[in-house]
Image (cartoon, rainbow, N blue to C red; front, top):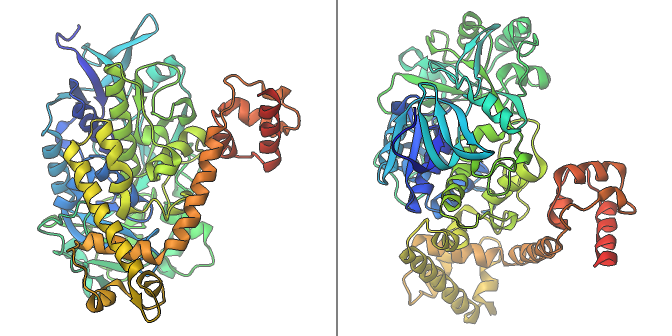
Length: 600
């Protein structure tokens, strides 16, 4: 049965990647449908109800700059905010926003429907391909839904299986069925699928926890936000901390045979940087305890979330483990931890616009591309949705270069290097992190957002005016004489602050708090910023050296055997991309450069 109404873009999945994809595509004025099994669950947070943190808050700041919805929803639903790494430099300072889980989903759905997006209930069974061309999707109830472009954002649902101990059942996450058939359709297109694994901790009844035994972490005052508009509940609740004990570790070590991972039942590869509690105890056997974070699921929910206590051990053992923790001796587990195993695509089979190299018009985003985390999923969703709309409109696809920020690095890592485990964004992955801070995401990306149709022109005018005021103030400080040096040199001295300088030399132009922070950062870190600017120029030089399409690498003199194999597989477009392929050495790059000059 063929649906009467066609769409230009169909998004499969209502998680964080799917919402951003539909939202971005609709910004370009195309007809968009989002298909999900349960529309009431769109935007839900199956793991920790928090947004941001190291490497992740930078992604959200870039989403905000590009016109995405995640930052707006997080601010509206915030119940606790804190800036992490505040004692370090601005490149790694990261906002983390604890949200009301149910309120976040509600706000995300409300924002989504500000644009004319059709939300359809159903399970997609297959890509609809005719004559080698993508023409839409087919659902399990027999519908054929026409579309010019499709974004697959299936999260952990593709052939998903959840594990409680050594017992498993088909599910995409707790209480929800998996996507049963879509994996096979992707294989038929030619895509390679792998099994990955992730997990979530138990939820504990809040009235069974002795919070007096826990260390409280109050929310910051004033509260932080991604959009500059903290929500009404952002200072409402504290979070808490506890630690594992010797008894916790003994319970785990004595029962590893009950873990589906250690027993060999789970084939999927889990995230190295977000391990289960049993992984932590085994891998870090020298540690007497591990820090855990106790966080509320919401303003009025009866649950707290035990971050850092992800597990796939059996429920009866989880109860003993939880009660071995300080403050949890009488704890009642309301929802047990579990592991989920699922199919994901090989991201090296995608373009930098997140389009399939095998089937034009097919895009993908989120955990199906091998990533871990809400923020990584949302960032991909925006890019995939934008490019799906551009494809439908006959416009050239776009991408974000590595030098533009965290989203560019995320996609470049996935597409250029691939991943053999769920990929997590970290500040250490970004070479130019001092230039690509969360606080200057608007300067870097609003011009692109406006050019791509994601934000109105007046937003760019406001951003330009903001940074013109910042630059004017920097010029004023350079002209000042303070204790025998310029105002900028004085500000770079340890212990000196811009606020103290303003008390002595008030600025004639009122500046916002954001603008004052920009002045101080640019003044204090000028030398480091200049150094990174030079690094960016070198990266651009390498990007300008393009490699011929279809280059016969075995015929390039001087390449190592590993370089021939890796370069033939990844087919980098530039010398910069070749440099980022795992296993490529400086001598291989020199051989390529010599070959290019000889052939040029």
